[in-house]
Image (cartoon, rainbow, N blue to C red):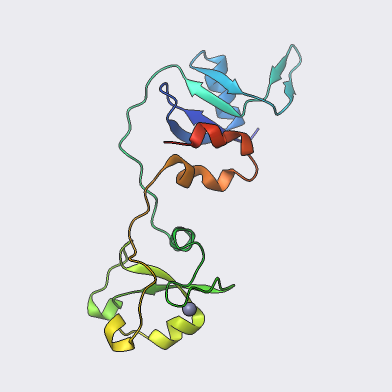
Length: 167
Ligand SMILES: [Zn+2]
């Protein structure tokens, strides 16, 4: 009952990923409609209910534009798991402050990049000009598109793709 279900707003904008349990609650309460099942059925004593994969709310939920949460993992993902100095897709990655913390560099999307251990060691707490190093691209906050936000679920839920595209 904890499988991920894609929850869409009344206008089909992806809202969230919830559990099967929550989705069933919304469906039974008449607050949502099932757009996609394809995961077989849930059997209760009295009935057989299709297992939802995508559900859509019957009412609009107002929500500010989502942001990607700033975490080490999300920085790696933004950078496609590549060192932003040498371009290597290293097995062991580190988080590098472009402007070092002791020089006032912040923990922010535009000051954090993925670096392999070698490049991080080479840079060694210096800024770009003193270290004579260059970034492959300017780091910035990733656009929180639905594909970006929920893309991690796609390998197991290919059928979500058309619902995520374009948002
Ligand atoms: Zn590197």
